[in-house]
Length: 370
Image (cartoon, rainbow, N blue to C red):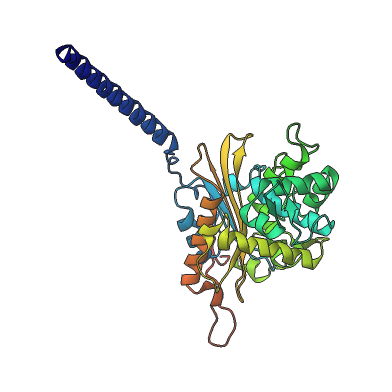
């Protein structure tokens, strides 16, 4: 009997071994397929500076922005929030287009509207499920979509679009900037998702980097929406005069309240890649989504720093055909710009007599008439 059982046992062991090997192969193949799906090919390198008119740019700022952007398809706007002067504009061809979906940067509009309309206070906890609730600070910092969808539904379509228009969306941000096209504001709530989708993902809006720079400038300076101006010569810079478009009709305390959340985004939220120095804090808001009009995956970061001198607004917009870009990636680009300028003491550059030093200005035009 044992003589007959032995071959059966051996056959069983061989069969088990066969199945084990086959299972291992299937597991390995599945793991390889999953790994391949997770691997995102980098976008093809581009020259984002191609075709830019750089006359009038602050050379120090321009170099920092170009170095940080590298060969990624994107646009960078750096502006002075106290005057509306554009200090550098990288990839003007892309940045002057009629706009892209703003993704989660629209949450800044939602937050200001909800505060000013007394829908919430900064520390109001909004319960989103049985065990989950957020207040405004943590919702901005972590870019929580259900929270801002809830605020949007409470505000309603008309109030949301009113605040978007007040903050400069849907119109040209610049004054006589050649080639600038305005973005647009939704004319009705999205068919699927309604107002909540507008106020959390930006669905229905098209925003340009210049418009977002104008909005961030108004937050940074405490409530004044300036026309963005792009002086092109030393003479234009010497005679530069800020032009106010309008004050934004929100309480100064509401602006201060959203700043706390924007600081949180950099300190512990979605924009951690931007942080570099606690003595020169950065405040900002990320945005990540797909722009179905251009079939591009978008990465946004609108930001400003809080320092004694040379305060800047830095807006980074990245666009790619795959998911290699995101809001956190854009925050990293902006952080590299701030870090580069800080290392050059740009934010504290004073002459021996205590007056700010004049920046180097790029010019390709003759200085003097013959």
